[in-house]
Image 1 (cartoon, helix red, strand yellow):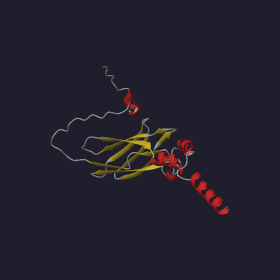
Image 2: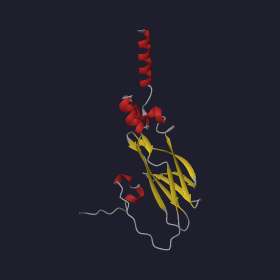
Image 3: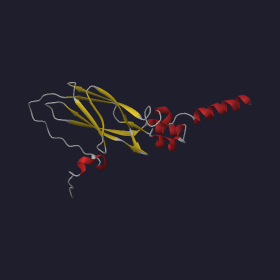
Image 4: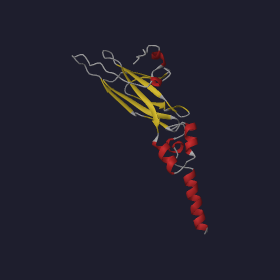
Length: 170
């Protein structure tokens, strides 16, 4: 009987103290709240400027570069970043990087530790970045590039651009 009780206690403790996103990913997101992001460009030496959704500059550097960004913007809110990449003689490129729900938050809390549904949002561990690596290749072309359209949610529009929006009525 003592063996069964000991086994039960060990299983209970192992279940209680593991498998939520905070423990599996590190507190406040991935490893101390910061998620890795690498930016590679061809040619190298591109200027990299990263701003968050409030248009605050959070990083400035030159490619190739490794950085760490916080995936959470607060309780149940993922962060959005705009990675601006510029090389002299080429049009500037902007890549959006967003915080997305971590698989550890869903799987770990459904299977093992339902208390994580409460702990993880406070720690910020429910989010990871949707990209780990950005690879941009700048090439010279003789033809004009086709214009492109990117549709994004209004809450993902940088603050400094919101006053330039034009409402289109149906």
